[in-house]
Length: 199
Length: 199
DNA sequence: CCACATTTGTAGCGAACACTACAGATCTCT
DNA sequence: AGAGATCTGTAGTGTTCGCTACAAATGTGG
Image (cartoon, rainbow over all chains, first blue to last red; front, side, top):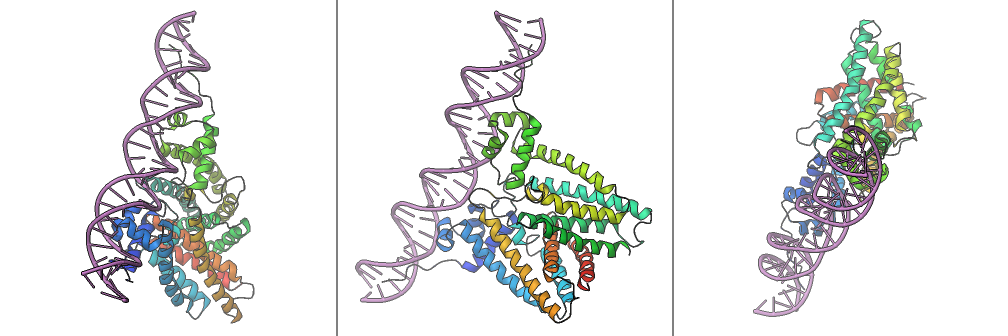
């Protein structure tokens, strides 16, 4: 008995293309048509190889996790906890703005949705988040004028930092983090503020 | 000439219901059917009052911003920058876990999508984020055993904090934050780590 | 060369989506 | 009371979604 016609595309290369699409548009914002076009295959090939749209996402996440684990090994291999933290944060900043990939991280962006016809919704949301950030910044500008903040403290950076932390808390809250957990994060964040504020 | 039949529902109350649905399922994950059921009206009433699904979201965001502005006024009214930061962070922790609302913040959750049939995708993503957090925690447990971290430093809290910051950076990166901005956030975050680590 | 197994492309399936036509109901104003 | 205006509920519209039936194409083993 024969072994059947061989697959005419490279599954790993196709997965990389799919990962990029999911990363850019989120799981729900991605359509099968976008995926098949990016992967250069037809729907039956996709379903034969990955089972379903969700199966394809999981395969893409597995591939993403492989790269991430290799990267984490480098981070965790630092000789001190302090350097682990520094590498983790800085490498994240670089990875999330790497022009070779869509912005952000697949594990967060995958849950976002920017489907066709509602691309301006994320824009609208971002604008309103920025508004809060601006309010904080203005307050810190005033504080600096009142010598309530150090000479080298930057109101823009402080406001951005607080905004980033609360956005991160959002992500964790949506994953089920409880109030105690979020308060602990807030308490630790405040220490960074104290250090930065007296600069 | 007459003024027409009066509206049979309270627009503000309906808006609150819509806000809850958007908050819980994200914009794209929300269907008109879910909205009309929650608002207790029929599609034509929704479209007559708000124009479109996106128009309804904007109206809900406006209503959300009103409440948020009132809340921010309280925060910004603190007498010192330090207390502004503390209130901002702590009130966020509480607001995002307020059982009266869905978890998180509408301005972030609104961009998420948990449509019917893919509720497990956010779950899958969260599990993989937790994996990274666990790797960090284990590394910090080791660091503590090696007296590389203070006696009172909590590996779980430190790992959670770093995870929250990087998730927040994701949200900002997806809104267009550049590398320099993210590195500044990372640098500030590191100061909190230092303070916490020597505890 | 001939069964057999698997992939590929075309074409289209049922379901769900955002949205609306239409007719009857309910108001205000004269 | 009657005319004009707006809302309400029913029942759809066309489109797009994830997914698949089917037949032709392409491989292997006997």
